[in-house]
Image (cartoon, rainbow, N blue to C red):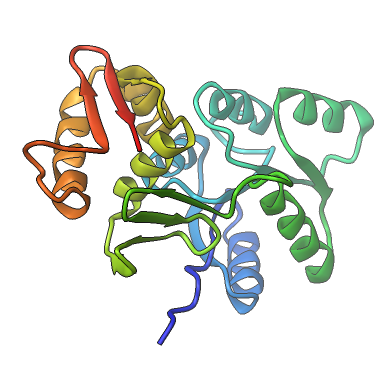
Length: 230
């Protein structure tokens, strides 16, 4: 029996508990998984830790303005960001969008419009014409379902293992540096933690390679990074 696709995960960064509760109810009813953060710093930490599919961000956070949060995110990730704010001035909208936000929705808003905006920003993650699956050897990465299969059987990967594999697959044949991987998967403050990569690469090879000690597809470029080859 084919398993349904994994539901997208959304991170809500808002200091108002009532708004977070409302967003959680609305989003979970529509099939999304929801994570929450009440401050900018917690939100940035969650964004790096959980690797959400999309972020819903309030501008009026207690520790850092939301526009600055967008700029910080854009230093290391392309995750789509929907700004939710009571600020309805044109200057605020321009600043947020120029900082790297994908869309801007003024509070209060209806649930239907919110969900439509979420669907729209998530569609941008996979541009038209991008392959729905990446195949190498007997491995298939189903990008739509976020599922990895080996010889037709699903392989259980952690969220970080999946993100690591997908990043290498999207740059297939090219070396992805340690720094680039760490910034993309763990955030800008993790660039020295190369031991993270060694541990996760070991697990990926054990799960995907016929001989993990002599990998065919997941190659190491010593002192530089990793690359995926067919």
